[in-house]
Length: 137
Ligand SMILES: [Zn+2]
Image 1: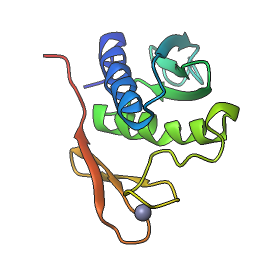
Image 2: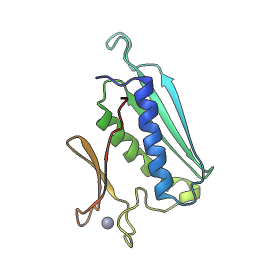
Image 3: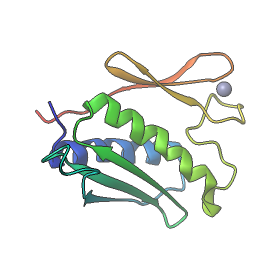
């Protein structure tokens, strides 16, 4: 099922919640979803594209582009993976995002495992978190 505006909003909320759990000082996470022109309206008529931007407590930003042909779990993986941009923002400079196990200075790796997005330690392969894409009921 192709992604809809509502499905993208739901996934973006799910990911904003994740950011709040990772960054205790992220008292506010603003999500902005902007429809974009498709890459090639002639080849892909009616294809939807969105830019999903997260702004975290005026400290960091991440921006991810999603297209309507993605499965919800693929879209979730891109959003979570894109949050790595936060560690390059001045307010979070050098902080590993996504955070790995306690005491690990490196960021965790974002992977797919069937219907789930799995966040793992890149050195031990341990699962740090596992999430399933929220879908419109
Ligand atoms: Zn680790």
